[in-house]
Image 1 (tube, rainbow, N blue to C red):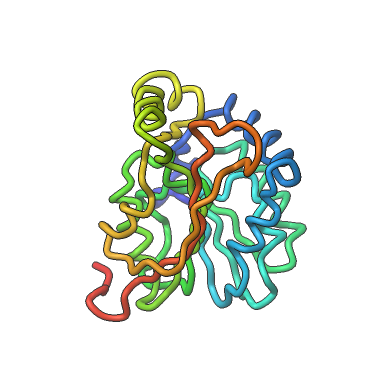
Image 2 (cartoon, rainbow, N blue to C red):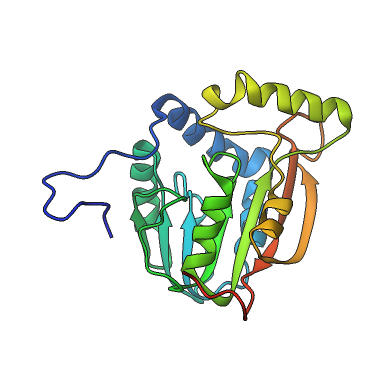
Length: 231
């Protein structure tokens, strides 16, 4: 559903506007499919999903081609206009129905408890308010629903932690579309009340130099069956 005010003559302003980074990301993400093994990561991220899925921060829509046919529908939220346009093109080629929608992770334009699964892929690093975004994810997910995540964040030893924090305080977020290097997605999911399932820490790329962006985690979490009623 489009983000429009009642009776508005034009859409609301995009919540995220990073046109230069969007152009870079669109090229780099396609190259990463083979060079960094992202295609295999996407297959593992999405394997076994079914029912209604909401993907938050869909970017240019490279996940769409990897969704299994057991998925009935994907609602893909993407706040950046250029990336959203590319996502629409990829949605038209997907094997499952995909509806690309503008919106921000902190205020998802969908009903509560409407989805069987949530997918976040390299998203929690760049949202403005991680606890609020995770509260929204919990709200829209049915009790017992699954979160599939692939995120990067804090890793390495003391020297790497210092480097990540220093970059977060200076050049990295403005150059990288609001991305932060020192966030801890596993801790954030726990603090938001999700039950952590199996997850695996990995380096991207697996071989070659280890960079501040290299520390990733791929895994599963659930909204608890009880005590998790959305507000």
